Image (cartoon, rainbow over all chains, first blue to last red; front, side):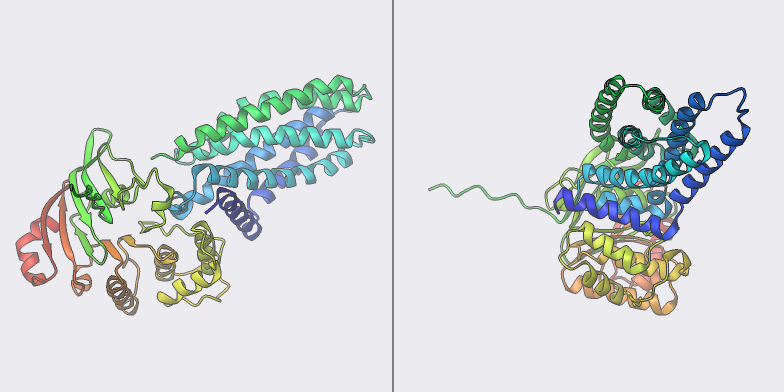
Length: 225
Length: 240
């Protein structure tokens, strides 16, 4: 079987399981909504400026909701030993990795697609002209941390307390894109020239390439029992 | 004129001097076993004797610390194509709870690159007597039904070698008879089967070689042509 077809088959299966169970996306969206509500009502408008708070809330919520989603990725393979079926299929470990990666990207992007309008609604921010750039930043940041998160989810799924291990390990890798995202979003919302965020976009592209390649190379080792 | 060198003979499954440790404990100790097409190997032994570990080593799910495993002359851990020759069912069903039996088997068939995943899935479910069109999720099935679907999953790509660990677990008497008949039919078609089970009276109906495993080693080899009572009298201490 071609690696491409195997990758698509695995991604399609994960999406089918998610559509049937609605576990990962529903949990992540609920989490995101709750965080937005808490930050929105806990803020004292006179004390904390919306321009300072809003970008941080957007990025922290997006990152944590993404982590919630990733936790489910390999947990479904652990239940009933489905991982054995994947490992014994005549497909490469790379196909398994990229199949999982594509499905995880789809889930996190769906969560972001729900999060962004809610963020605009709750924080009453005007994203005219900046929406496309913020969406691009979210896409680039997500592509990077989902790459490393997919590999770490495979690594931690066989450990005890894997639901706790994944966030702990992944958070350190999520910090750079979140910091970059906050900086760039602050500038975009402040109406600063686009030239100020080009460097951040380049950083995210490099981050994505480095961690996608690294995770792809390390992934087979996580499958070895 | 010198004759050309003979091509090496490849066994369907060759477990060659294989050992595996977990920590300091050696669970499988220098086991050698070959399986050819149409053979049934019944692996018996007490709990914790290393039978399931041997099965996982045999299909390439575990890496041996000593020796080697070859399927058709290739390492199943390294050669993807060779894994298509294996049908494995361990202690877990390898099914997805939120998919139906048919969806589970279609996915397995797609992973094996079959041209007609739907047809292959329906054929495999029919072999174990599971209605294909029941739109019920696996999580809602009874233990016995799950086991039958799991058996079907391991058969969906028509493997040359079946490795089944406790295949009769959770099955009612009718299903047990059906599975035994299925194994005999598969043997007739040249499929090799490695069975790990404690259900000796049922499996003794098959024409099989028997390996008794104790403390990770093959303690005795026999076959099902001898009377089961005699076998138990002779090896009772080894298998219980």
